[in-house]
Every structure is written in C-alpha cells, then in structure tokens.
Length: 531
Image 1: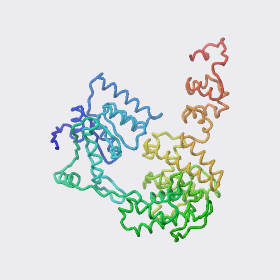
Image 2: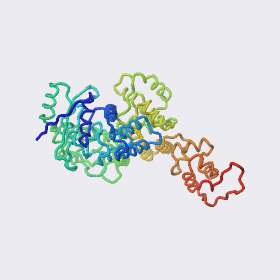
Image 3: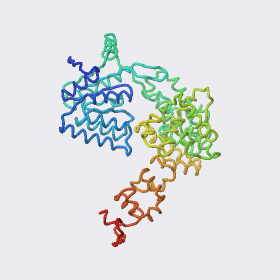
Image 4: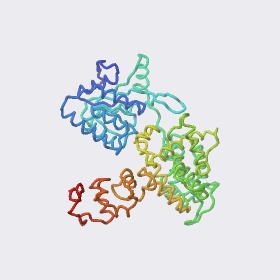
C-alpha cells in the first residue's frame, strides 16, 4: 500500500528539499535527470546546502573519498574537481562522462552508505542494485534527434522507479517521486506512468547492423549452411514472432545474403575452401560458406558493413601516404563509434580547414555537400580531431574545454578506436598490406598513451606514461639506450627515486652495484643521500 509523505519546502528547490529530507532520515536517494549537465548541477545544489558535523567520522570519510576521486586522473579536470567537492558533502553525480574508476568509487561508497545522494542520468537504472530508499525522477522527457523533447517510455519509468526500496537492503518499502509543476501535469503522469501499459518489447534483430552481424556469424560458425536452414532458424526467433510477416522477413534476409556475397564474406561451396560467386542466391539448398575474410570479420564481432568500409579504406591506402589523422577518420566513420561528437555551426570553418588539409589523402571519401551523410561526415571529422589532439599530448582538461568531451567519453572513444584499429590490422593481414599493419599498430600505441610518436620507445618501459616520458625526452633521454647511459641522480630528479631504480633494472642495470665517490664537493649529493 502506498504511503503518503509530507516534505517541507525549505530550499526553494523541490529536488534539494527531497534530498535534504532523505538525508535527515539517514536514508539514501537517487535523483534521475535527462542530461549529464543537469546531474552535475543538481548534485552541486544539494552539496551546497548540506552541513556536516565538524571533525565527525562522516566528515573524515568523505574527505578521504573526495581526495581519492580527485587523484583518479593524473591531471584532474574541472569535472573531477566538481565531483570531489560534491563527494566531500556526501552527494555525487554519475554519468557516462566520468572515468570508470570514479563511477566505481561513487557506486561502491553509495552501497556502503558513505555517499547519501546520487544525481544521475538514466543509465544508472540499468543492472545496478543500489540501496536507495527514494528515487526522484525529475525529468520524464528528454531530447531525441528529429523528434525534439519527447516523453520517456513507461518501461524506462518502471526501470528507474524500481530502484527504490530494494529488498536486498532490508527496506520495507521505497518511494518513487515524480515532479509535476501543475495539477494537469500530475494527472498526466498518473495516467501514463502509474496506470499506463508498458510498451511492446521488440527483438534487437530488427536493427539491421545486428541482423547482418548475426547472419554472418551463423554462417561462419557452420550453424547454418543453406537458405532453408537460415529461414528455419530465424523463423523460430522472437524476431520472427514480433515481425509477423515472414515473407518480408525472408526478403530482408535474402537481400543481406546478397550483400555479404558481394562483399566476398560468403560464397557457394560444396567442398572445403572451394568457393564460387554467390551474387544471386536463388537455390535454397545450395551450400553457403563463409570465406576466410568473412570468418575473420565474424570473429572480430564487426558489423559486416563496417568491415566492408574498412577494407575499402585499406585498399585505398595502397595508393596514398598513410597518416594518423586519416587512419583515425577511417575508424571514426564506423557505426560502432557512434554517438559521434556533434559539429556545431560555429566550428564548420575549423573543421573545413582540416578537410582541406587532408582531403586528397582521406581513406573515407567526403560525400557530396547536400547529401544526408554529410552531417555524419562532419561529426566524424570532429571526433577525429578530438583523438588527434589526444595523441598530440593534449590533456583531459583541454579536451573537456575544447570538445566538451569528458574523461569517460574520451576513454570510451579511445577503446572503440583501438578495437577498430586492431580489426584493421587483422583485415589488412589477409589482404595483405604490410605497411598498413605497421601504421595501425603504431597508432594503437599512441592512442593508448596519448603521446606523439617520438615518445614510443620510452613508453615501452613499465611505469612510464606520457608525462614522465615527455620529461625524459625533454632532457635528451629518448630511448632505452639513453636510459641505460643516463646518470641515476638525473633520473631521480626527473621521475623520482623508486621509478628511476625500476627503469634502470628494466634496462639491465643494478643500482646497488654502482660505485659512489666519497670525496664530494660542497653541495654535491650521492646515492647514499637517497636512502
């Protein structure tokens, strides 16, 4: 049975009122909003109103946690500092823009009860069990491309509201609170979300990239080998049940099979490794087999369309000088990299300058200006610019200010780009294209560390990242050989004693066997001074 709760209005903000009331009960709450920016703003509003008891255990715990949050990145961004300030007051924001370690700390300490309030985007509602007595759903609408502001699905409301009063945390009940500005809004919320029916569930196979990927995977694994077997398999899926029209489903699958054949990912074959053209797959009983290229695409979990575009780029690179920017643009053009950074009107001139600079060497050609794909092309260029500045050793704070790319988003883009570059390497080996393989591997290393090519020899050493590598390089220590020859005292001054000892050992030099002169000049130090 629903319980009625009266919450005092003290702070001229309903979310702050609910949060402060919840903490006054020594309970916890999740606040769901529709954007990352809103999550940060609401968390800061709550944090500013909360006063902790001086020198209390809670204040000490939160101070330690705040410092840990701040140290996650080697160079804290403004976002890191804002999160740390919120955490110091027992509240936090949570969204995809945070570093993975920061999200982990926020979630873990909410479970422990150290953090009392989390303001988050709806992604937190999926698959995470948290001890929230209250869930506040501030926004029941969000912006959607081509639709503008639209109401969230009933299923999504249920997902968020279901976070309140979890039995695993001994809550007898929980409270899910939606915020309405008027009486009519209140009635609309009750009608749609409290009494309304959830939406129908549809199979993900209805999305073409997913269907293409699964179709090639089934053939590559020899799970199905004829059109009859393919149709029988898909006819028994939830996709077929929801699709209804099996004739149209068969037409879609045949079209995809012909595409896979035209891309040389599948062929007709009756004996092992004997393939013939399969551009028109009309005989339902003919044996369909994956080519070696098709098998590798399936093993890489690539959308076949992405693989086809990557292969076109690899082939085009044989006639061009391969450059980091054009390689990055090739992978940023893939569907798997979405959502891309959105190119703003004010940025078109800067983006066009990049296009003009690399236009003749692009591995993914520029579409006509008025085609629908042109906007995606510009977005891919902007995303490429972000990664290009990262490998040029720009720090996270600069990238956040320039591209509005948070550390979490940057890490996600780097990971996807690395996977796609690895896929390029594997595909290029089969084509074959040795030079392309070498350039991709070099770029993968630069992406991992966010460093220029000149630092790669130093980055092979353990515990040497781009900041330490740049310090060494600036002092004429440019590779492993230079590290071996470098004076230990100089190394210690640059990167610290423990790291200096470690890298000396890595290059085969035992510091304990070094001779130390006892007759020092005034002001001179020896190894013994570092003990």
